[in-house]
Length: 161
Image (cartoon, rainbow, N blue to C red; front, side, top):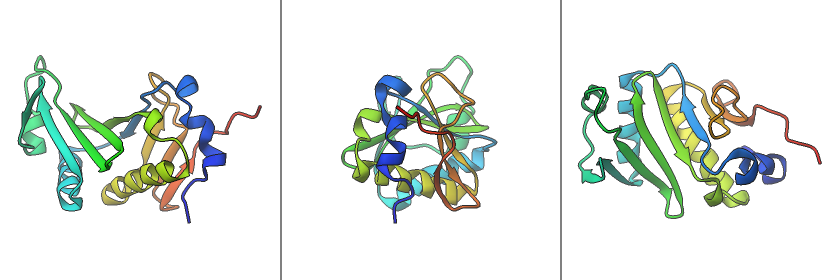
């Protein structure tokens, strides 16, 4: 059974309402959590590409990435859980695992299921909530992985027309 039904969550995947790149985050994270995510990507065999300043490099240990100088360009890890869904992790800080998804890639039940599976795997691995906020509106999650429910749930009421 799907975590979320498209008919219930569709408004939260509308790029005109949410912005096309909502922020997905795991608060209260650690360097160890970042490393666990890097290990998960490798373990699952998801296609990925790590880069710093546009230069593609082998994926380093999380500790090395997160201890770079404050003025260094922010590295990113592009992860494709499926060929047509991309998550872009940005290594801003050790205390929050964060990534972007493009809502234009997450239209319909099939793509929503891919997103929920991906978010659920990260949340289960870390034993922490994974929250999706509208683009530029951190702190107001609308969807997230609930650790106790062990599934992705709505965290805000869908807009009623």
